[in-house]
Image (cartoon, rainbow, N blue to C red; front, side, top):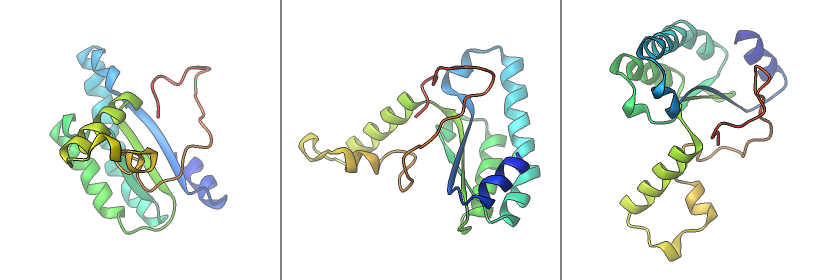
Length: 152
């Protein structure tokens, strides 16, 4: 990850989103899920200080409240540590799907009491996890996969 982040910083890429866990991944076996969750928490604890030293701002996109407490704490600590950084933004998409993001945006609109006739693309965009960021320009899918798997 360090090599990729350094390269993107050097080439003035402002946003990087890494998708590590889909809401669909909860259907996997419990042992695999637990391993993935612990691995992410370890990575965050280890790399957040380095990201901070590089001026990277870490953000989480996805349903944070449905993650185990230890992982929520690790994510929140790293987000807090890097919140004032003005360099590249690294979005960690964990417990995320595009459809879940749309549902959560609609729920926020309803909660805010916004009437349907007042909703347009700009207003809807402001209720997405990615509010304030540019639209995605490039998606790289590893392992030879060609599908987007409900991303963005």
